[in-house]
Image 1 (cartoon, rainbow, N blue to C red):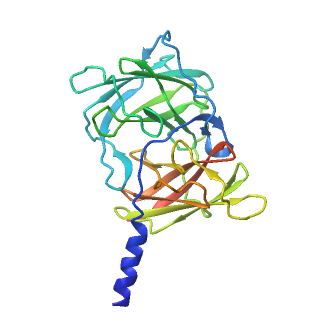
Image 2: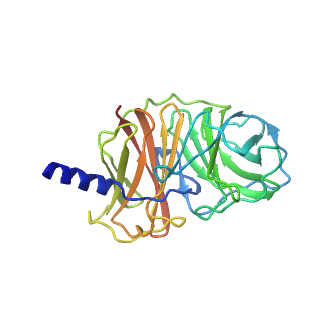
Image 3: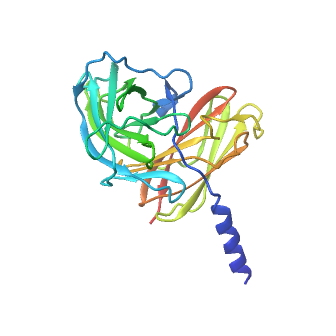
Length: 307
């Protein structure tokens, strides 16, 4: 009987009832995380940019927030789709690239109205094929279902883009595309699980604690924050785009994408708890975006999920 009560308590702890919505941010370089969040300036292309067709249009998906997060897996269908284009047509490493998204409905007509989610209409995640580079952008609405944003890809090679959006009156959707950036490539870094899930970024020590990492099971991810100088738990964390933090999780093979947010009310610290579920075993990269003293920052961890 005591074991049953303990099991109930553990289950109750895991069901923290988190809201997941979309994140945010433009880029600055931070450590080895590649692009990092920056609440400063979103750069966007002008309406006069000439776009060439490029990239590989892949499956768009409609997702349910079964685990109170946005998740998507390759091959899922959805009501709207994205037509991707780049200028220049072949993105080059180290050079500014304009990305355009044209969003159309099932009849090929432009989707002209979107629900704002965490203060933005579209959240665009870009990662390199080896997951060493990460960027979170907000394309700017140019009208008639078209959104544009500028970025720089730091090295040549494979990249994948994930666009999160909600058509007005519809449900959350994720569209994706893959492409190759020209220019000098760097040796791919093999993805290995971190031995210690602790990082110090922007004067804050961030630790990641996890419950059982097993595919198909609900998992709690707890980020705790300490001041890097004093070692004391911090109580001055700040909301970032309407939430205590934002977490993006992508599998090693790039097939699984999760976007999670914590429950409302968790803002000041010293921890932020997220709840999600991993669709398959394997290695995953976890990026967390948080804000303190007016500066937002990114942490990244690699974890292994069992069967």
